[in-house]
Image 1 (cartoon, helix red, strand yellow):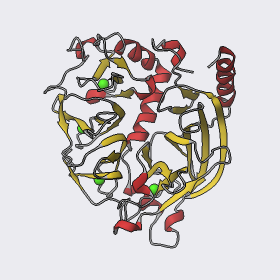
Image 2 (tube, protein in one colour; image 1 turned 90 degrees about the horizontal axis):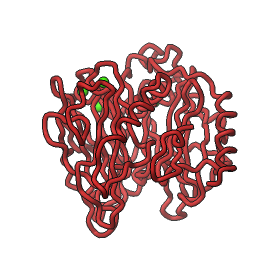
Image 3 (cartoon, protein in one colour; image 1 turned 180 degrees about the horizontal axis):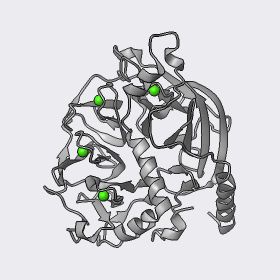
Image 4 (cartoon, protein in one colour; image 1 turned 180 degrees about the vertical axis):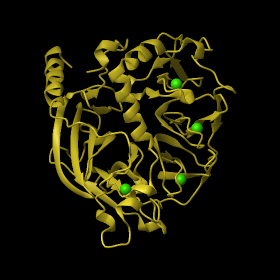
Length: 416
Ligand SMILES: [Ca+2]
Ligand SMILES: [Ca+2]
Ligand SMILES: [Ca+2]
Ligand SMILES: [Ca+2]
């Protein structure tokens, strides 16, 4: 990107930021439920509010990031974590993949970052680092923070999620590892860093599939008020498929029924996020859609309901598309953040234009209940940041996003 374009891009974003409405983020329980999906039923606004009060990983990521940007923690944490030693082959992944998270539940935000080695065979190592502004928590010279057992090896983590998985009020982390990037090996995996007393313990999700995992999210898909795990994968044997693992409430997960291959939702694997978009008390899933016949991409929402996200029967998933005239069929969704409104939500979506070949776009979709009201192109393809995964955070102080302009991760150039 040329300097001129960058300036224009930055200017454009700052110009846009003034238009961004103040977020009502915080208490996820709406006092004025739209009630649209349940109108005419016995459901009351009160029951919609009572049904759901846990935050999805997308909600928590948004909340933590804006807090840290506002109070200055973010830059301190990013600078700190990148001062930790690394192996020559390791590189930090783009800063948009870093997670800001309150480890240990002490109210102070901490950071986690991912190392990647762009070798033809991925370097398998302890690729996850942590950083706390509290020096007394920094107990490992390389990893930053070590926990009760050794960090498992990973190859190419593509998504980090946060949420309390064992109901102790302390946020846990989930890492989605792509595994080997090329060739016949499909060894992706899911790691959970689960709070345990005053520390955390690593555990690996038991899966039997051959996986390459690009994305995942923490969402209560069975309405029992704990966060479950959904991830998308391509596998040698299983093809493109979405996987659902149910939480027993203590952070133990078991595979459960999930959309059959060939259904619309089963093709999602690039980006998965969750929030209660229509404010009915049930978590909803936002993902890219992909039509294998036409090759066209889209943006789809799978609606949670009394029967759960994936319905009482496999085929009963309720999915709808949101659209924008500014987004072409070859523009691929990378990330979404949901801002609740009094009647629904605004969805801030980042796209890889022309399937990662021409920069990025940011679109805001406005929904009332489940109905799309409008869409607005906020930033066009001059916005070009990371190689993969661009995120935008519509904080109260304006739109915040990350740029990836130089391999040396100049922090000042990475946040606009
Ligand atoms: Ca903390
Ligand atoms: Ca926990
Ligand atoms: Ca659940
Ligand atoms: Ca919902």
